[in-house]
Image 1 (tube, rainbow, N blue to C red):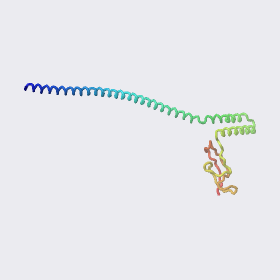
Image 2 (tube, helix red, strand yellow; image 1 turned 90 degrees about the horizontal axis):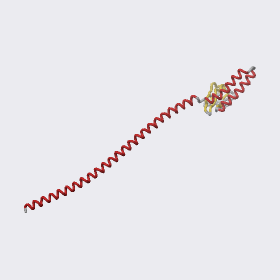
Image 3 (cartoon, one colour; image 1 turned 180 degrees about the vertical axis):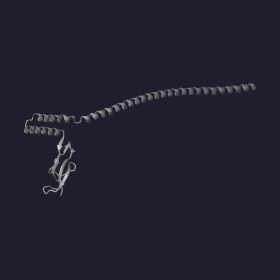
Image 4 (cartoon, helix red, strand yellow; image 1 turned 90 degrees about the vertical axis):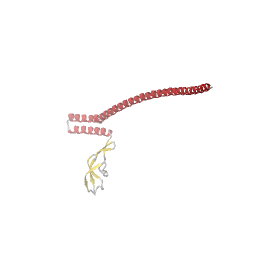
Length: 192
């Protein structure tokens, strides 16, 4: 009987050990499944990371190309700007060349002072018209009220015929180009 009790005790221990082993095997199986799942998740994360790194690399390459294109654009724009500045007066000069050549012809072909004067008067009229088409206008002065934004007073004198601040005489003409003063009228002003 004592042997039977020992055998029963051993059988129970073996049974408990087998149950523990089954639980551990089940836990081990679950852990292995979880490990496989985590390995798969890690592989997916690594693939996503690799894809993102490729995408970042493509963006960086694109940004570098855009930056190079922008630098080229800036250089080209600056070059064009310099060309525009260099040849800004080209149309005006082309228009004035006709008058220049007319003066040359008048000097060569005029035989009398009267012919020369008539030729110069025609050229003056043509040149004035050309400049007006470009936006040049004379600043009115004589008899006008002095305006420091258009006139430069070279002399001031008292005059009974004029009001205080009125321009008595225009010493040199002034001009505006498209409403911007490019040369002030030099004037004599009445100051009482």
